[in-house]
Image (cartoon, rainbow, N blue to C red; front, side, top):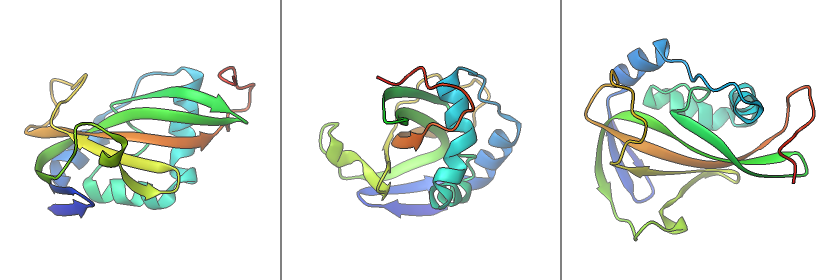
Length: 146
């Protein structure tokens, strides 16, 4: 299925993504990852709906990590793997301008490079990078607070 998001035109194999993510588990259980997994759908329901259209489960990233924490808001980076191809990307050389803003606090960009790709992930594939801010919602102290 063809999707256009800003400078990106993507050909995404939604069915292959659905089949993979149905059985995939993101295994990191550190507090930052647990906060992301339990909070991202609730914090960004419209983004979760778009990810679902791609065949992705927003609570199952390929990788996610905290970059900073202020006032109980964590800044996350990370990526998801997507089965399909980038058809077009009129991009500069890796700058913030390459990010496509989905909401005020959720941005994405795409790359043909796939980091930490699972052996059984359907190919061809590409990577969707994210950066987002998510409130701390775990029922324990935020040890990432700076």
